[in-house]
Structures are given as structure tokens and as C-alpha cells.
Image (cartoon, rainbow, N blue to C red):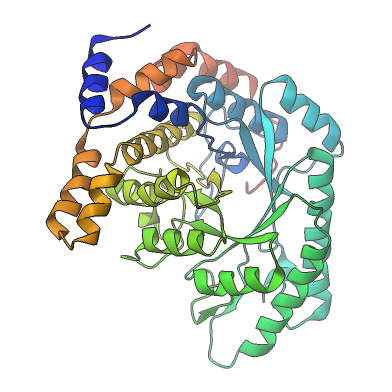
Length: 404
């Protein structure tokens, strides 16, 4: 099944030397993991805003993630947050996920919310607190073994707010010692993704403040440890696409948390405020994918809480924005771009990228969805499905797990 707009676009792209079937094949294989915490009521710095139909527990979060996958065809797994998604029957949760058409992805330990972590977790001056944090991460390794997860995703709020509060070198050594114990407990074939954050909640110093800190830890630990880039965890104006290229070249880019920096953290929908930045990031990712001499194993994940937008709708919007950015990156004329770069033709190089970015690829994405037996307009299809009305009626009362 085709449509005239797609036929015209395909003809134009073929004239530019773009193999349209190859682009479609890559779009059909694109995989984006959504976060369980994006479906439940979650917190801002000031409070929690409850929404109708918000998921109250792990099973309901899996149901919402499965709905996003049904409508997009590109989100087959959901990341879990422990203890927000804790259950007494992990095998049962895994089986339920399979029954509704979703898989369990990255496991995210929580070592920042408990009162015991007031002065940090694995960099805490108190060895008993460091022990508590390590034991929780080891618990999560055990959950990975039961659920079949291959990713342990780590973020730490550790840092200080006042000069002299902590010994920087001691804290660095404590961090490595703790991560080493967890790393050694990982099975073969699984990975530890180390996330960094420029600031907040620590403002004087953060123990994992940037990609260099995370890279050093990952390099010291070994091949099973890599860096996780969260788009919201950078200073304004940071050239994230450069970080992407550097880490890929070092074999240390393990994953992404997609969101938007404008909220000072990670709660805004990816691609809605600075879509060109997202395109440039995907340009580097696609370049590595298309290079037969480069090996990549990158986990693409969303990290958004959707405090204001309807939760399932926002997740569908995020996935669609990522599909669009990837599609535009795939139609960049790589040969012409390489020639312009090698000859110092700066304007030509920029125009090549801009041409791809400004191309309306919605007919291509609609065609890909049709060929995947999905509705060409996922958001509209979801709104017509009655899913939101159903969960709004079903999810009333009870106690919510998680941030709330």
C-alpha cells in the first residue's frame, strides 16, 4: 500500500542517490525504550501533579508501555526503576510483559531518594551507607538475571554543596571501589551504563559531573562498562553531538536518555524545543551505524516524567520525534558531506546537513508504519482507540508505587 506523497518523496530521494528501501529497513528496525516512571504520577522539585489514568504499579506501567509500542511499532521494551517497580514475583512480571507484547529493558537502581542518602550513596563518608547502596545495586543485578535484562543503568546524586564538605580524592576512590564490586557481579553479555550529570542536587561539585568522569570510570572497570548520555544533564550550549562522536570512537557510548535540557533536567519531550540539535546528534549516530568499520551497541532510551502532558500521549510523541530525527539523519548525503569536509568547503557541508534537516519526511514515516501494520498517525490512532478512557475508569483509588 502506497500513497502519492510518498511516491514523489521516494522518487526525489532516489535521484539524490538515497537507497529508499535501505532507509525504510533501518527505520523499521529502530528501537526506543520507554521508562516506567513516565507512566505514573511523578514529582517535580515542588510537588506531584496527579493525572487521570496514571499507572499505579509496575503492571499498569507495562500496560501503558505496551500501548505505546502497539501504536508506534518502535518501543518494544520498558525500563524499570527499583524500588518504584518492585514486586515479589519478578518472573511473573516478566511473563505478564511477554503476554501483553512488551519486554523488560534496563534496570535502574534508586540510590538517591532514601533519607539515608542525604550525604550521598557510593561516595558517602559513612561506609555503612556505601554498603547499603552497593547491596541495592547487587539486588538489581539479581533482578536482571530473573527478568533477562542486559542493562544496569546507574545514576548518582552524589556531590557536595559547600567547600570542604568532602574529600574529592577519597570520594573518587570510594566510587570506583563500589562500582567495581557491582561490575564484578555482572554476568557475561550484560552491561553497566554510567550516567553523569552536570549539577543538581549537588552544586559545589558533583562526583560524576560530565562525560569525562563517566568515561574514566567505565575505562577503568572494563568492557562491560560504558557511558550513558542524558540530553538533560549538560550545561546550556554543550556540543552533545561531539561527545557522541568521541565516545563512539572510543567504543564507550553505551546508551542514551532522550529528553530536553530546557527544564534544567529531563522532564521535557525530546525534540520539541531544539529539534535541530536532536538531528545533529542522530547524524553522528547514523554515521557510525553506516560505517562498516565502526561497531556500536547503543541502547536508545527515553527518560521523561511527563508531569504536565498526558503520559501515554507524550511517550508516543517522543518516540515519533526520535523516528523523525533518525529518518532525516539517514538521508544525509554522506559522500558529498565527506568531500566538502575534506576540501574545507564549510558552507557546502552545512548546506548538505540543512537540506536533510529541512526535508519533510512525514510521508516516508507514514509509509513505514503502514508497511509495519501500524496506523500512519500513531497519536491520532491512540486518541481514537479509547485506551485513555478505559484506564481512567479502571485506575481509581489505591496506593501508587513510585515517586508519588
